[in-house]
Each structure stands twice: as C-alpha cells, then as structure tokens.
Length: 113
Length: 114
Image (cartoon, rainbow over all chains, first blue to last red; front, top):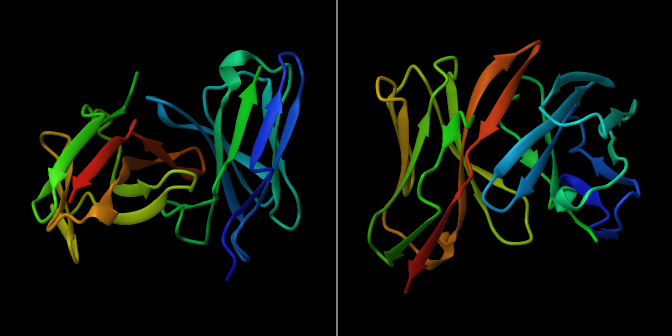
C-alpha cells in the first residue's frame, strides 16, 4: 500500500509570505502528525490531528496552523514567514493502536529568503 | 529543555564492528522508546522499539537496551554495515492529553567505513 505522500517536495518563499503544505496519510490511518526538522534540533513536534480534530499541539507560535479533512488528508499552514522557518517539514501517519509507530513522508524542504 | 538527548552528533565505526548509539531522557513519564533511521532526502523509518517493562529487545542485527534507573537507552548494531550509515533518532513516548506523543532527540549521524 502507498506510503505517506507530501507535496510539494521543495518550496522557496520570501519573508512575510505564507505557505501551505499538504500530506496524504497511509490509507486507513486516521492520525496525522507534523514535525519540523532543523540541523542540530532533531524533530520538533508541531501538532497532531485525528478525525479532523487537533489532539495535541507543540510549542510553536500561532503562525503555524493545520487542519485535517474527512479523508484524513492534512494541510499545514505557516503565515508571515520568517527566515528561521526554513526547515524540513515532515508529516507522519499512524494507525489504530499504533500511536507510537509513525510512518513518515519524505518531507517538504522549505527555504525562506 | 530537551527531554530526550543524543549527546553524540556523529559516530564513525569500521565495517563489521559494533556501533553503539546512546540516548538519555529526563521525563519519567516516558514509557515507550523507539529508534528511527533517516537517510538523506527521505523521511525517518521505524527501526526498533522497547517498552519500559523490558530492558532489552532484539531484532536481527539491532538490539535496544533500556536502563530505567539511569534514564538511558542505547542501540547496538552488530555487525555494522556500510548501508547502516544514516542519521539515527531516538524517540520517547508518553500520554499527552488524549493521545500519545513522541519526543525526538537531535539525532546521531552514523558513518560505517568499509
């Protein structure tokens, strides 16, 4: 079965702009999580959605938001981009009873100039 | 405050030898631990996990050890192969709100030299 799909793969934006990233989870998975990866910082948790509801949120400013649709697909939005938002954004899905075992997509590499 | 720490950013090992990757945690509420492997331009992939009720879990060449009193876990790879060269992330799981949440370390770049 198909894995987690993230689009676009690469994105270049300028400061002040906004961006929307998309994630399609593995078929049947209802939980979708988003992580930010920067060099030396590991994976920082952004938020997690389950059945269109945000269940958990990390320590990121309100400029970072997300949503999940009825088909479990998820989008992440970052408004008023800052240089420090340049990072690899990873989406992961998990199945019922497997909250710990995340399946990751290849990520969207965002560069803010 | 980093609750999961991987203090070695990089590790080089000769092919055929043992690789030992370490991870420390501070939150005693963590009750499940995982290791992920990440190649460049790919997302992390699950490698092996261990529940806090165990102190060892083995899967082929990979073994994870958990020392709860020291809040320390380690991943052993024996024998190491060049294809094992990747970034390894340690992760710890706890209940947060209505769901479990994973907290990741900063990763260790393993290089296996032929």
